[in-house]
Length: 177
View (spheres, one colour):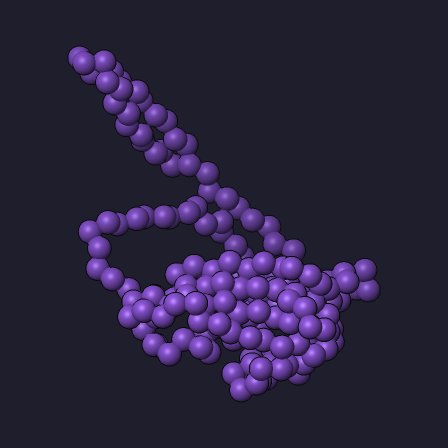
């Protein structure tokens, strides 16, 4: 079963079958489990304008291949924000919990600029996938694992600290590439 088929099943059913081939050690790959719960959460957001604001995933116990129940509880639904909790159950016990808040964009005078330094990566088509080997976690068969040489552009940062007449410290920062 493909991920797309599994995600379609999540839209329509409370009980799903977690397919074989996704183990990472003794449990199903956490990225798949988080994705299943997020898909179930997104299916329960009725307002198309609401976007994911925050998300927390707690892995309570090991998730196994096979039947799993996905439940959703809307904790609060307002006109601007909806907060919900999605749980994955197996054998009558909660194995994973996702809590997420979705909200509509709002105008604000506050501007937060978070511009991380992004490494320069080679395009995927230029990479050679590593063949799956039995020493790898089982879930790796679903990914193209490639070695990637990363070039990180470092910035030189110098800071100047000055003291004004009242003894207050004034700082300025200069970024030099």
